[in-house]
Image 1 (cartoon, rainbow, N blue to C red):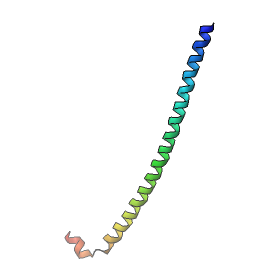
Image 2: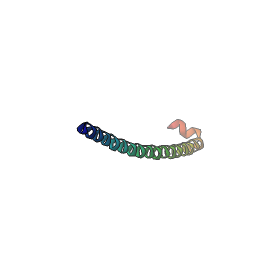
Image 3: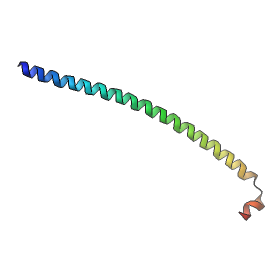
Amino acid sequence: MESEIQHFEDKLTHFVTLFQRLRAENNELRQSVATKSDEVKRLSEKLDHAKTRLETLLAQIPEAESESL
């Protein structure tokens, strides 16, 4: 009986340790996802800004020059 209790306690300790490690990893992954989401948003805004600037520059090119390209 004592060995069964010890075996159960060992398993329980193992699962608690595993749970804590997975919880910590999950928190790290959540933070990483949040950081990446912010980065994607920032890069998307930069891309939109560059697109707007490019469209503005293209609109300023005279028609005669754009036809010869």
